[in-house]
Length: 307
Image (cartoon, rainbow, N blue to C red; front, side):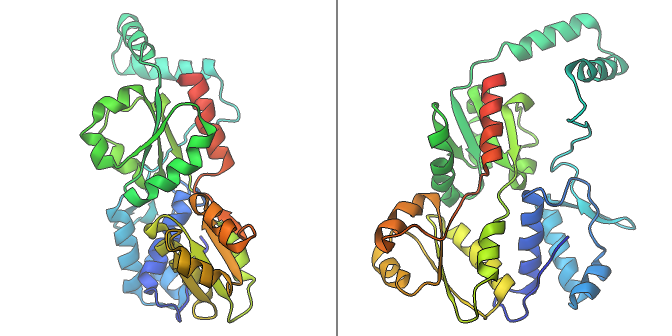
C-alpha cells in the first residue's frame, strides 16, 4: 500500500490517509480481504501519530470499506468484492457443478432448482443503464462518460433514491463503484445485471503533477465540485505547497479564460473538455475519466450477454 503524506498540505493528514486508501480500494489496487499494515506500523512508517491512523481506519470501516477486528487488524472489507473463482481457468461446467453441489447441500431438489432458474432467466429486457452514485454532482459527469457508448439511455440515481424506486431494478443494468456496493446489499438485484467497477486511479494525471517544477500552477476543471475537492486534495497530498492549484467549473468562463493564460498544466473532465479547448484554443493536458475503457467494455459485454 503506497501512501504519500504531505505535512505542508492544508489537507489534514487523517483526510489524506482516508482519500488515498479509499481511492486505492475503489481502483482495485487494494483487493477484497487484503490485510492492511497495522495502525502502529503505518504510523511509524509515515512518522505520524497512532491516533491519526486509527481515526482514518475507523472512518473507512464506518463506510464499509474496511473490516477491523480486535487482534487481527484491518483488512479490505470482504463485502466490497469477493472473487473466489479463478476466472482464467473457470468454465461453465465447473461453475454449474459447484452451484449444484451447494444447492444440494442446502436441501434444494432438482424440481425447485428448475423452477427458480426459469424464473431468473425470464426477466424483462434491459432498457437502461442505471448508474448508482451517492454524489448527485457526479451524475452529469458519469452520464457524459457512458452515454456515447450505448444506444439505450444512461440514467443516474443515488442509492437512497433507488430504494424508493425499486421497480427500476427489474429492467436496468446497474453500474456502481466499490464505494457504493455496501449500500446496495439489501436490494434485490440480479447479480447478472450488476456491474461493480473500479474508478480510474488517475495515474497519468498524478504523474503529470509530480513532474511539474516548483511554483507551477495546476488548473483543475470539472462539472463536479466533489471531484474538484478530491482532486485538489490529491494534488496537495502529492506536492503540498510546492505548486499552486486552482479548481473551477466550466460555467465560470470568465475566470476560467483568465486562469488558462497562466496555468502550467490543465486537467479537466470530459464534460468540461469542449469549454476548456475553446477558451484555450488547444486541448487540455489531460482529460480525466472516472471509467476506464475496460469498464466500458465490461458494461457492453454484460448488456450483450445478459441484457
